[in-house]
Length: 315
Image (cartoon, rainbow, N blue to C red):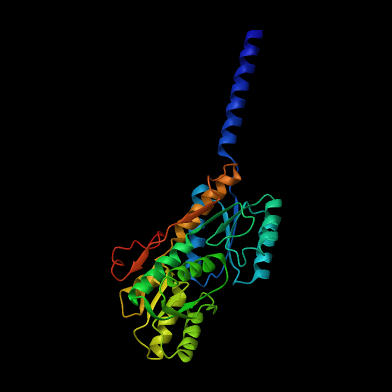
C-alpha cells in the first residue's frame, strides 16, 4: 500500500511539474494593446495600426486592440496613455508627439506594469524602439535630388512636425546638400504638418516668395503630393520633388505625370509587426539584443517603381 502511495505521489508531482512548466512556457498572455499615432488620417499610420493588430491577433486571436490618433497634440497623447493605463493594457505602441516631453507618461505606464514600445519615432524611456533608419532615408532622397539638379539650383527642405523621424530625415538631407556648394537651401524650417493640405499650403507660399525654385525635399509622401498639386495649380514646372515613405499613393504618382520623382521607402506594416513581437518578448522577460531596431530604407524612383514590392501589408 505504501508503495502505491509513493508511486501516486511521484506521478502527481511529475504531472504538477509538467503543468507548471507548460504554464511558464506559455508566458504572459497578451490581452490588450493600446496604440497612439500621429494621425489616423495618414495611410502610413493606419498601416501601422493594422500591422500591429494583425500581429497581436497571431499571438492571441481574442486580444483587444485600441488605436487612437494624437493629432500631434501632446495633451491628447498624455490622456490617451492615461486611458490605456486605466484599461490595464499589457502593451502600448507609442508614436510620440514629442520624444522628450513624453517621458513622464512612459514612466507612468511602466510603473503600472505596461511594456512601452516606441514605433516610427523615438520616445525617451521606452522599453524598445522600432523605426526606419530615417537619417539614411533623408540622405538617399536628397542624393537623388542633388544628382537630378547636377549639384546646383535653389532648393527647399519642406519640414514637418518635430518628431525624431522628421528631424533625422532633415538632418540626413542637409548633410548631403551641404556637400553640393552649388545648391542653395532657401527654406528649411517650415512645418507643413505632415499632410497633403499642409504640403499644398507650404508650397503655395514658397512659389509666391521664390521666383526660381528647382527642387523640394518633402519629409513625407502626403506633403510631396500636396507640393506637386500646388506647383501644378500655379503653373510652375520643372521642379524636382523627392520625399520619404514609399507609400501606395507615390507608387501611383511615379507612374503618371508628376514632379515627384523619388521617395525613400518605409515599411510601416513590418515595423508595427516587429514592435508587437519585441513588446511581447519583453512582457515575458526576453530583451532584444539592441533596444533600438533600425529598418533600412530603399529609394523608389520612376526607373524601379515597377519592381518595387511596396509596403508589406496585404494587398
